[in-house]
Image 1 (cartoon, rainbow, N blue to C red):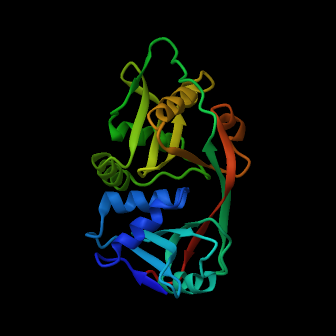
Image 2 (image 1 turned 30 degrees about the horizontal axis):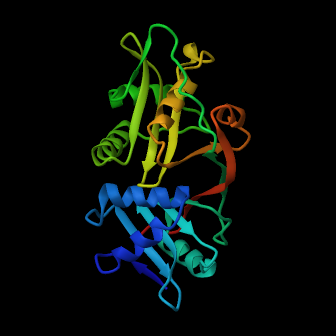
Image 3 (image 1 turned 180 degrees about the vertical axis):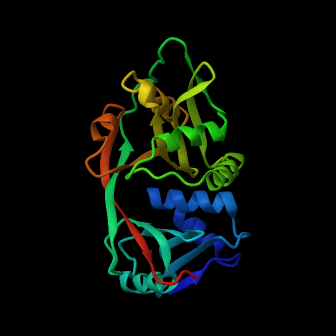
Length: 259
């Protein structure tokens, strides 16, 4: 059975998420901690079996859906639910019988942290960079496989997460210019997902991207740290920083009426 999460069954969702250790539980936990149950654009569902045990959890931010599955999940039920309620994107850890197209990539987990890498002379870290400057850098790196939200959407969500301690951002500055950045796009009590790693074209291959990631990882020692990479991209880069392949993820494109 799939149920909407409210104050009556919130503890069931929280207990379920605390027992998981993956990017899906991290994203849903981050959404819950950041926005709670008080916003129309953020919603949560749980799937339970006949004994009342939670077998799957759903988190929705506007029309973007994250699903945390288990071996006990009723795939047919949740696929029907997802097809009916609709989504613009859906992230999960399995191929679902919902039709439509999907992209697939690899989740990597930090297994062997490397020492924090030094920056070249004349550069420094900024642990509270202006978000507009970070967005401008990310936008300059945008391509077919790397899409950046509109500035207002990025600013509102990132600012909210920073205030609630569910994200952080580090940049490298050369003078007054941001030349590289990395951030946690989701944080929970146990896990973190690093994303939006970017550097200016003119400052690549000098180690500032690696320095940004290792600096961020050094602040996440008590958490399981993940990254999500595109198929056949950046594996050697993240291997050099102590990450190892863990499992595959799937992102489905929009399907059905969004309710």
